[in-house]
Length: 319
Image (cartoon, rainbow, N blue to C red; front, side, top):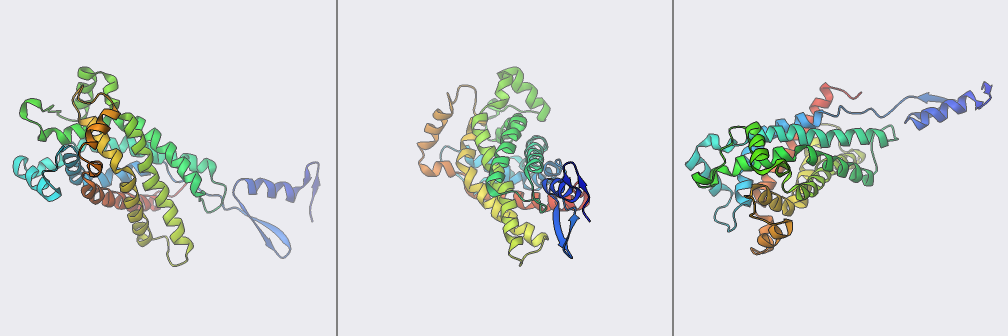
């Protein structure tokens, strides 16, 4: 029987409380049973660890992408650029800037995944832990914005270390490691130079987070809802493959401009619009320089990131 109280029946009050917290009410034999099934939160820091692990494998492709994007005239394609780098500087040169790349992932990706998971945990109100797609877009935008603010200094140093070998010996910066690069940029060009091209980087970071995280979750949710897929590595691979293609298509034009702004010497470009005009002189396809290596790099990076992430989530279950 239901016990009456000053706020109504105990059953009514209890049901209202658990429903608002994401629980499920199940009717059994005409009586309401409370089945606690709150959506649990994933650990916010796992995304950064997964991205850093993926970066180790895909860094050579990232380096080649930077070299291709900083060409004003298309002189070499992906394989040609790879042969040139190895012939002139050795195989180890393909990992120039690796320390900066890892620091970037541990800062930028940890922040964007972390913000996404935290905000998602605040907004989700269903037991399955899924957000409507428009909320994924909003949460992903916030995550991308915050990630860029934290990771942009490492991105500047990373791009410069990758591009250094292309410059004449007299113009090379020769950063010894990422911390040396951060110190020298701040001392020689001013502290705010570490956020050079940040406006473009913010747009790219938002689009990247939408393409990778929001679309990954949406595609995975769609596949699981068909009943033909299970929560396994096949679904993770398929979802991340689609997310990688979408992320590359969204970010490539912005990525070209961002790379040029960050690798430029002081005074080379007066503004983003100047860089935009300079790049447009090569035609529309100038904004898609390095698209193939970008896709070849970002596709595997996205796939490896989410496969590692899903495995980490199994080892470290949600709170």
